[in-house]
Length: 97
Image (tube, rainbow, N blue to C red; front, side, top):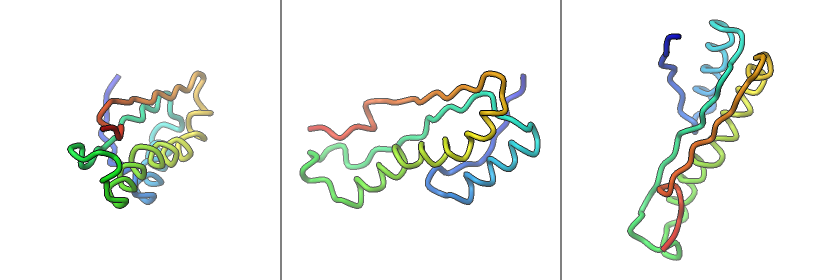
């Protein structure tokens, strides 16, 4: 099996749609989706001092990005005999003091 790079920014609906179209055109289905995109901002600050813009950016990537990509890829995953979604997480994506 070969690996292939597909440009996809989870905060950019145009790249999500383009990736889904490319996968559909080239393969007709998607067997595995691994949601692994995540960011962190201002880890040195306690949550009560986090600027809302920083928290919004983290949520846009770590939460809403996962939903957007998953929703775009679901039709392709449903065409697979055994479509699988894996969500990867880490401590860097958390807000804690």
